[in-house]
Structures are given as C-alpha cells and as structure tokens.
Image (cartoon, rainbow, N blue to C red; front, side, top):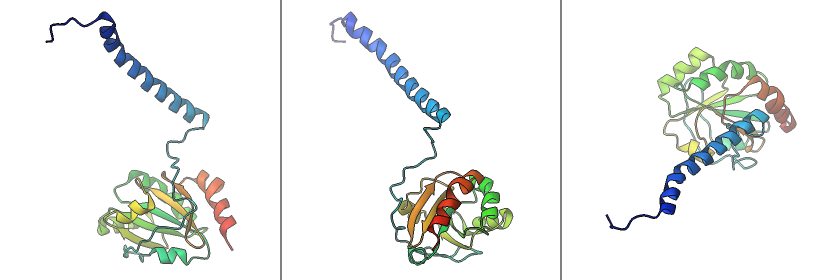
Length: 190
C-alpha cells in the first residue's frame, strides 16, 4: 500500500475499462455477423497470397491407392486440375466427398493426404469413394505449409503451367462447382 488514496477519477476510469473493452468486442462481433448476413464477409474466404503464383516446390510420395506427385508434375500440365488436401480424421472432408466424386469426370482431382496415417487415408478413400486421379501423402504437413494450408479440407484450382488460380479453405459445394470452379476451369482449358 502506498498510503496515498487513489483519486475518484482514476477509480472511475479503472471501473469503466472492462465495459469499454466488452463494448468494443461486441461491436466487432456485430459487424462480423452483420457482414455474414449481407454476404460481404465470408469467414472461409482466405485472401491467399498464393493466388496467381506458381505452386510451391514440393515432391510427395505415393498414398495408396494412388501415385504421388510433385510441383514439376503440376507445372507440366496443359489443362487445369483441382488439388484437394484431405484427411481421414476430418469431418468436413467426409461431407465433401460425394461432391468430389460427382466432379471427378468433369475435372481431374489430385488429392494430398494431410498429416494422416497411410492406412487411415487408404481406408478413407475406400469407404468414401475415390475421386482422385493421383494421391500423395504429406505425412508431416511440411508441404502444406508452403501451400499456405491452414486446415482441411482445402482445395486449389491449378491452371496450366502450375499456376494457382483459385483456392478455398472450406468443403467444395455444388454451388462452388457451378458458379466458380467449372467456369474458371473451362476458361483455362487450351
């Protein structure tokens, strides 16, 4: 104790500080929810710095039942391909599998099993269906860091020459395929 009485003004400021902080947080949440209602804020929209840049350097081993791939494979493509990060332990990945299985005949999909045990990833594609033309394993998740992956599922549309043209950090939906992915993929075809 300093022995000096605190001033009434200082006590009032200290008492008001938590109310000011709570009010600021409340306004922030209100603006976020209001933006989601109006459609001007999408919590899944990641402004990926990788867009319109070449895929990062990587080489990933096979993930059964598929064949692994590398940056050189993607850079050598003449037509677009979808690259989908997934994991057997990911519930949204299970939810998007019917959509990916329906898409695979219209657009090639290459999968990357993210931080998954090989036997679990194999079981996942055997149970949910296999939409992937190639499947690689990113067991330690190091390649995902270079891609800018923040979780699974995440999907990238890769254009000819290995350029990242589109990216989402949410499960693929029919609306995404109809409104965004296929129109963009069609525009990238030779």
